Amino acid sequence: MNIGRPARWAVVTVLAQLCAVATAARPAVAATAPGPAFTGYLWSTSSAPPPIDDYFAFTSDGGAVAISHLATGRYSATFGLSQFLPAPAVHVTTYGPSANCDVAGMIVEPTQLTVNVNCYSLTGSAQDATFDLLAGEPGAQPGGIVDYATILLGHLHFSGNSSHQANKIMQLGVGRYEITFGGPASKGVAGTVQVTNFGAGGNCVVAGWHGTSAGELVDVDCFSASGLRADKSFAVGYARRGNLTGVTGAATADAFASRPTAASYSPAVQDNDTAGAHVTVQRQGSGQYLVTFAHSGGPYPADGGDVQVSAVGTSDRYCYVVNWGATVSPQALVNCVDNLGIPTDTPFTIQWVNDAPPA
Image 1 (cartoon, rainbow, N blue to C red):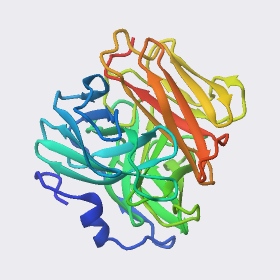
Image 2: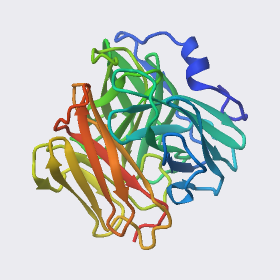
Image 3: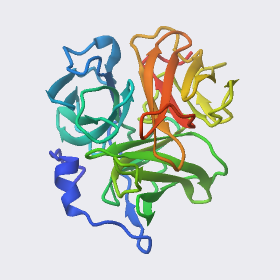
Image 4: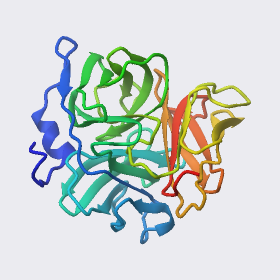
């Protein structure tokens, strides 16, 4: 793809047909593709959306945001652009229980980004649902470390790396992937990871991540709708000291909620760009958690913000947002279930961002 010339592409329907499954013997590599910085998000406020609620919609360059309901479980969201995006990152978090929403494809045009979202029951049938959608491109000089890739049939596409290093993928087995985001050497677990399933049904989760001498290593496990490990396409993003789109000037906080049975705690792994901010997690019941982003709302929140959640582990789990509120100390209620929809204590990652500047 020539990133210097505006083009039109559909991620799933075109590029997936050109790829072969990666093998452990030959890891796939993708070069960086820095472009203009952009972020946009929206909340689908209804399973059959009316005109968009502006309070829960935002683009960093002031473009229009819209969403349409195409058929049962099928949606098309558009973000107006002031300039072409060579390689955007897209993430979806389901809002509400008993459904799973995925990215079905993207189309980038010079003045518009279109993201198609499909929603399914946990057994894989098309189902109307609501969701939180985040799209963006970090640009050449993002805030913090921001790395991402869309992985289609085991190969990296539309990959970004804020350190201008190569990203690599290795398939370890059926439905098991290891992604290396090249960058500064680090140790232990830091930052946040988000994984979004691409394509029809099934689920992908964050199996784990940690720093290495070569950069950040992220493991992803994927499952079919029946809960068996399966090869899938997905998007994965990593951020440290910033948000998943890399745009500066927005109030951001994230955390790894790693203690699913603890009554109340402050996660050891968390990032906050507002002075004095911190994240706490309170367990409300089996698989139910209230996350508070204390002092991360910015001084004057102008919109409802965005919340992204991913289940963490090696089992087929779903975590979704039940509700959230944009105040000086935003809160989000997160529920996690197994592949039968039964509430299940589950570790998860979570990111909050809105367009208000950090205090």
